Image (cartoon, one colour):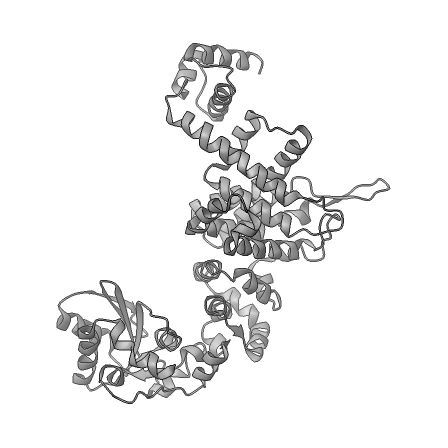
Length: 489
């Protein structure tokens, strides 16, 4: 496998670019090596569009010369102090760095890297010359770790850059590798170093973990060290917080398992949404929506510890009233801590604040056998673009609760409700919103001398509901109805 992968290297990339790169290095009296993640991926038959190279020194000027020789591309200086530059070409990115921290040989450079699977090198000259025997420079046994599918830290890895404490789990998630035992022990011992890392860098790594299908596994692995507690103390507040018999786990474990079920639903939607799996696929194909859903799953019950109450009657029943709103407030604080965008924050916070709505509506459906137009309109309007993810979150939340007093058939009921909500949304609400409005905010302000503000929005939504219910159908009827609502307060 090793030989065939290396032999195929030049077939994956523009030969002229690679040979120019090699010739440029040789003319400057340097050897150039393919290193890092690009070589790692090549050895497991994954073709990367980002190639990493190492040269003895002078990487920035080397890349400028490359640009002159090729007559195309853009040079970006990534780190002048550490002699690192990037040449951006159409469909391909080339990073070149000088040997690290005074290293004089490629072997000395490689042992200063992060993990052994990223600490291998191959001379580019061997890769571009036909029939050349290719030798992997591998001072730390990275190839063996690659075959064993483990992430092992290089010496001094975490002291050099504490972000690697988190990056170990990112590589584990992306590659489906296990973290080697001694590396896990080092992470536990050095977890406090993560507090020295900039929030933006941490947020970037966390998002890369969430983008994989193994985020739940990664967060559970982090839970075994102090790392997760330092990153998200709000999650740890739920450790040991027991729940009513609907549940079988404490609050923290329930949050983690809910994320796990989101990933299971995305992986095999037909099992959990047998009549609407195509709608699950729509969420799975939307990177932004899926990320928000997974974050909401992990954090959806972080408001429970603060909201927990024990009834003083004989039943001693545990309640968590308003935990959804308290959780949304905490999620807002987490978003600010990790410098999330406003758009991402809004999506996650909204999902957490609404995560109980499908359950409340399901109770109505079971008791009344029919959900009112008003209730359907309300959940669609408040959820907005989060409508489909909201029901996936509810399904995962339900599946993560398997206590002895959990009522039977809830998941089937949730899908039935989902179908009804989607049918209303697609067949009634969307066509109504596409047509002309009976009233606008300007109409209400002019007619009733109302000041601009939230009341206008609420009144317009109420008019829209009345229209969907058939209560009003003309502008005059809508104005009269609105006047009556204002008179009644």
